[in-house]
Image (tube, rainbow, N blue to C red; front, side):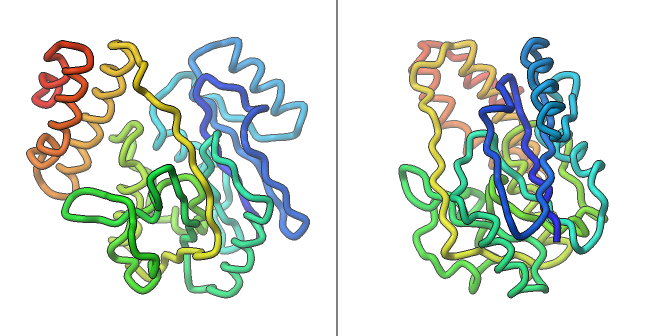
Length: 268
């Protein structure tokens, strides 16, 4: 059994990213750099060279799925290789890999293992699907009703054989990449390949965005809107449901910045 820890970096330093260690299995680190600042990229590549970490320069930011797919191209596909997705700012507990090793050995028929991830509101992953939205989970008997849930990227551990027939959808850029991937796996392999490790819990902290500039909020909202509309068109056959879902966020941003630009994005 071997783990490949895949982390996508954007305009930040790899030396500050999460590193995992295990005395039980081999771990190889793959850092995919979407950075657009030359100074950052040069420092990241030097750090990887000095510490014997695999470094992939994407030569610009072409989105999260393309970066994931590029990393997977560098991993041999076999039953013994496991791909562990990590956000660069996720803080994993020390026993993180040991939990996965035990779960994989106890459940050899499963192909995708996920932890429970909490934020300031509650359980954000597994996320419960209600209609066409994903909301925080209330119940915790996830494995008995796995068809009702989806999962975020960070902390997802995937057997490399899954990628013989599935890739991350490069029509997405940043948002809904994880839910799209989960849908694709369920469609191809069924619900039973997923397993939630109930006693493995991770706290995820997200920085606030209340003080963002108009330019920052507008750029981010355009990415989110484009991804959500594509996701809804792909899985539900229409963009109209995405527009309804985006409306409230657009109104809040319009009020914040005293403009109508965000509402216009809904119909681009």
